[in-house]
Length: 115
Image 1 (cartoon, rainbow, N blue to C red):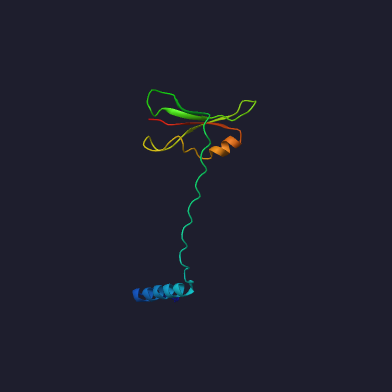
Image 2 (cartoon, rainbow, N blue to C red):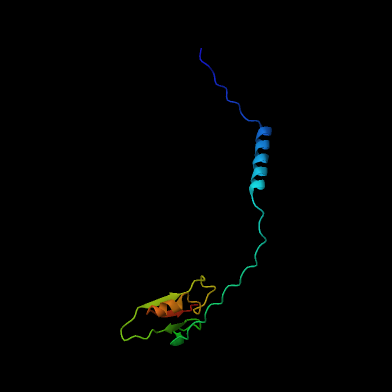
């Protein structure tokens, strides 16, 4: 009648041999790793420019203060109001990312601390 095709299933031993061979071949093809280079120190961030107004109170708590950097201009400028992250447990108004870039772009900046 019809012909039957029998598919042979690989045995556990065959699978183990194939895995071992593939690992050996991969290891043989992989060049030896070069010794790790010492990590270069991160360049220190440039100090923030001095604020136009520093530690201006906006509330009654000692941490409710802000710093303001005003861009010199004859026309009104945009204002970036920066509130640092930290979940009310960490962070500081002095850690304004890209402050100098904002000032160079003609954008005044306010950064606050909060309680």
